[in-house]
Length: 435
Figure (cartoon, rainbow, N blue to C red):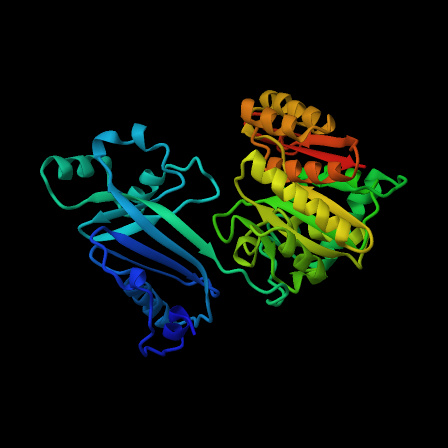
């Protein structure tokens, strides 16, 4: 039994641990835990051992009114460096991957990396702790202990759970991004598909679909899916919009609960993926407030009520990592019996004026349709195109090219200004079929 499991179950009997865990370190260390019930606890301090800090955090979790069965994420904070108020904000812009501890005379707060790596981590920690820059500077100039801010390097470990280990999660975005009841969902999809009209559908290797609120992008989804047969297995890969869960995550649910019924997860396919992708974590946290997969499920079920899914989300990755993920994905599809459709869940450029968004979307779509995943990656970075599913698209394009050339075709595109009438701050959408 692990130390964390023992403490959560109330067993505080001695456990023999390696010296490196029981040794007290003069520098500040910290641990931050998230349990399977989304309870969190932390412990920080100098002249403490990792075992002692872990025990303190677990004891805090054990006192929660919502019982926890296991630790889903462990974050260790180390290499603490005291920050200088004189350096803020210019020299703190590169701390988006670090943890920042803010301490004031009345309390403290810990800011950890989020899905938006452009976040001002130091500023967020100060806001959470009600510290303003003036009081921080005064404290440092006068030699006061607090307020103070400390930056930490992070070690993050996510539990790799058994595929299909968790029952169906409730839908997170029903009634927000799409209707909240089965009748309204069916009516809205039928109406939009009827407007698109009957068009001949055929098999495809992959499609790219937007994942915004339906009122903004449903026409693009419908026009694209109208031309595609949806087989019994669909691998859906979207971007991570939340800081929760593993960086590269596949759902460990048995099925996804939707207002219109449950959508089963292909647990066998998940197991194959995990064997081929050591960096992929099988867990639930990354998916529970994520909309990139959920928003598309009613459309896929409409096309094929027997569909089973493999839901994945990917966070920030460099091109080499994306190539490795794509190579593993290609081998997975090769090993699976029957036909597989891969869905890239992505919106296009975000929150610029309509002319800029349309120009940037055209650049990204041109790169996709060239069939060159390196071109897509470079184009988005060079032109600052905030296509949220660019990295999933790179993975899928690389995977498909392992079994032959690809011929992506843009079927439909639009942007939010066509619905809102506001051209000052828009999001672009595109539907692409890859054969």
